[in-house]
Length: 336
Image 1 (cartoon, rainbow, N blue to C red):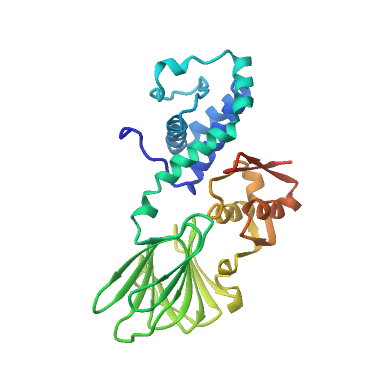
Image 2 (image 1 turned 45 degrees about the horizontal axis):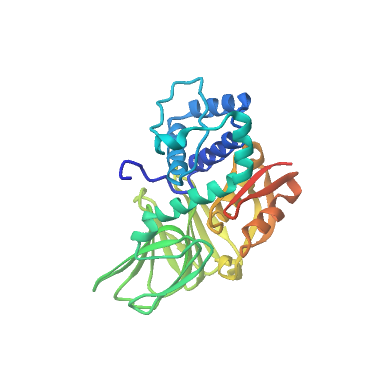
């Protein structure tokens, strides 16, 4: 199977949308409007087509017979992923009955098993936390790191400096003071320098955020070496845009810093799409949201991270939307 490329990380918006489109095609294989809408989406950007083709291949790796629509745009054909004998599809009415009987959710669950096996970044990291779990790591110098669900770090210590690279997710650091041996955290272009303190770093889809619970840190975006470092004290934070130059100062209660450690998520006037991105770290599978207008709706809520399904239900309650469970590993959000 070396010719099958691994799928993108499940937080990739194009990947999430591709899986949602694949589900809609399998659900309604003879719906011309669905096929036309999918064709239009595929033409919007090259990454849409790449994500959809990878989604098809992962579906095939799960050993599931798949309906493939005929597109009205130029799309290279997908290679067959099953032996020829298994590609003898029943007629449309029989196929619909077959899909109901076997359950699309089961097929998606199998796809997600493949996705879990292909988490190369998590497996290659020095430390990572599985989906839906927290993990505390004690480093060689006695410092501790709390890893949020799905977070991953690499550790590089030497005689002169202690360095941790946050590869993804959120982490809370409680650093042992060694003034002669600085402790640095790197998240993409952002560098945080401390001697002894407690602080949180969040590697989000569009931003990198640093907030201090105790002591002080210096945070800098290394893309702009001419800018002064941000000096942060307890209750202060800074949010750097990963694309662009935006920098936002934050002021927040110390007890709300890294609230995820108490399995809480505090949402204040945020788009539903941002909340969904956050909850995807806790759902062992997929959360599908393929409605831009719905994703732009803003909410304020206190959510319990123990149950992503219940958290989503609470979040969308005021938005006239619904969340549907498809098998054990897929949640789908649609307008009600």
